[in-house]
Figure: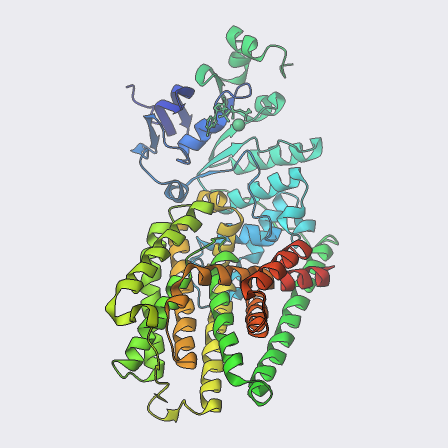
Length: 254
Length: 331
Ligand SMILES: Nc1ncnc2c1ncn2[C@@H]1O[C@H](COP(=O)(O)OP(=O)(O)OP(=O)(O)O)[C@@H](O)[C@H]1O
Ligand SMILES: [Mg+2]
């Protein structure tokens, strides 16, 4: 087992996941360096979401080890992974549908504010989170929808809301699973800018199909195909790699 | 770490948010008016309606309200809540009759016992989700049923009969109809207020998030099992409060109180009135108890009639009576 570089904040060694004998993720070594925006790309079914689920412990690895800031977190529960500062979004947009946009963000804020176990107080105490919640909602362009139920939002805006709730935790490491899927050009621009802005002082690992976004935003790219790492490096290196071109042949490459 | 965002000046789009906020405010104002009318009605009720009937309704309304804390606000369908209602009934009956306890202490003992049972059942059940959760609660409540069937203190098929109503705090004679009525009303209001408070608290806000999307709540760092277990114990305790009070009213604790049919009945009351609404379960309980009373002497079995009405209601208004009313008002 090779040791991870000192500046890696999140690492995996030999990460493997089998579903009934099918290897969805196979012996993946990954190092996400602190302060970078790192892309995980690959064709459909390559295992990208499964890697996310393994890193955040929503799935238990069949084998392999995960390190966060040098500590082995392979046995940590998913809620505690989030508490350590490794917070994810979901590919299938995950919001609280029958709560308002504002309440969605307040849920994310209230735990850190110590307002999560008080069952004897009025929830009006949560009003003190409103300024911060509204700022986050504004940052993802949802101010006009703050009072709407999340269920009423179109798909792209649900994704934006999910990003706002993820940011609400102010985590040092963010994992976004296709954050811009289903968004229009304008929103993609807005969210790209936002990710670039929040990535200052943070680390981002993101799955993204839109390669121009990847080229524009990401410092490092890991290509996954059939559960295995195919290539890794900066965008230019990876995109000129022959095997990567083959894996992507006929698909989104320029 | 850099600041995420900068705050901007208020814009016209904020109006939409304000409108939704106003709508919410209106709804809670209507809720307050309904509550005040209901309380006045309940204070006057014993002068117009047979008090034991109203008290029975109040006990089941509280039971359903407690159940709704789980189903409506946490998203957990327990199919074993009779264990807590009926368990408390036995504890209270035993304390009042055999130990000669004062009624309020006997009721509180019942509630505490139900809460403890809830801790055990909940601890096992919350690891399961959806239909498996319902099945585990059902299985455990059946075990509870058989324990009560066998335990000598419950007197098997006979139950504990002729439970004395006693003197409240040694001062107020609960054998007088108005005395016991206002005592029961007070317990109902306290229990109802407790559920309302929990639901509308920061903790309740987290419960609703778990109901809406458990994985998302986990990914935001919530250890959801703890919240679910806490909600389960609270629900069981208040269900026990209802069961204990019922014993002081009807002066009998029997196997019917712990049987699975009782677990089904509380599901029905809650769905009929509207799960996830604060008044729904009470209205559902009122309807079901009224129907049971009304049809008790008819030739067709009550369960069939209640069943048919239930199916019709579910087909006509999916959200339950109060749920549909709220939807209409939100228009
Ligand atoms: N819970 C599961 N049980 C069985 N097979 C699974 C499970 N989750 C994923 N798979 C399989 O593992 C493979 C990888 O899936 P995964 O969702 O990780 O791919 P992906 O790279 O995220 O694809 P996409 O770009 O379509 O999101 C697929 O073949 C999928 O069918
Ligand atoms: Mg995926």
